[in-house]
Image 1 (cartoon, rainbow, N blue to C red):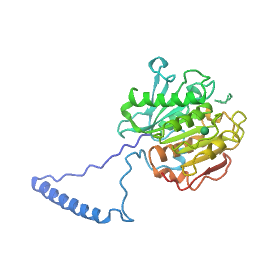
Image 2: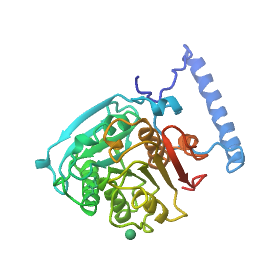
Image 3: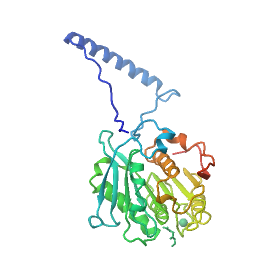
Image 4: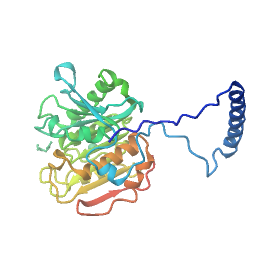
Amino acid sequence: MQQHPHSSTARPRPATRAARRGAGRLAGAAAAIAAVVGLTTLGGPGAHAAENPYERGPAPTTAGIEAARGPYAVSETTVSSLAVTGFGGGAIYYPTSTADGTFGAVAVSPGYTGTQSSIAWLGPRLASQGFVVFTIDTLTTVDQPDSRGRQLLAALDYLTERSSVRGRIDSSRLGVMGHSMGGGGSLEAAKSRPSLQAAVPLTPWNLDKTWPEISTPTLIVGADGDSIAPVASHAEPFYSSLPSSLDRAYLELNNATHFAPNTSNTTIAKYSIAWLKRFIDNDTRYEQFLCPLPRPSLTIEEYRGNCPHTS
Ligand code: 9J3
Ligand code: ZN
């Protein structure tokens, strides 16, 4: 599918000079009337809210966010570990087109012993929906969650300040994701950088069970069959310890293991896309997929969260 650049239909122009003058006067009068009408309706219940400057792509559908690819064609560039400091390099996936302006960006950390290839499927899957996505390698594959959190932030700094795609990114609209210790690292990153707009830890693992310091909207994804980071001692207490005033959610995958985030997974993609769109892009068109709370199904063991969202 092709990207959907904002386009306007060209208006036929009157042929004669007089006709153009006439059209100009009419347009001026119409603008004046529109300005007065706009003033009288500002703030009223029927007022059209200012257009969201961060919204990207067409109106979403369930099929669209469940699809293997979204509306944007995606390009990829790799970043050598030798070219960066504070993390291990990785792969950047980004919408090819420059017609839609800048995009929000997300850094994604792998888990213990994993490399960026273990979470690479998320790169094109999320980027094709209109994000710049950096799936990273860590400095060593045995780095712990606190280190992975710092590395996610170093990767975002590289992405927005030095990378070849820095001009395509809105540096005020950033998020973090990660698998296992990388999910634990996502919590660490959000705790230390409250300006992050969204966090999505995937079957997260961390020795720290309490996250009341987080003010970033956070979707925690657990797996009912996870015996490495059991939800009862990881994902669930992480979710429960987030402030109850925060926009937060807990999605527990049904019939899934610790390694569900390592291969293409439509449930993970669908709710990650909705969460990132809703909170990185402030795109309330995606609220429909998050509220009312998704019901248990063949793929969802349980879903908890607050509705409606407040930020
Ligand atoms: O990143 C992970 O997969 C964390 C789970 C783990 O291996 O914990 C044992 C140290
Ligand atoms: Zn804590």
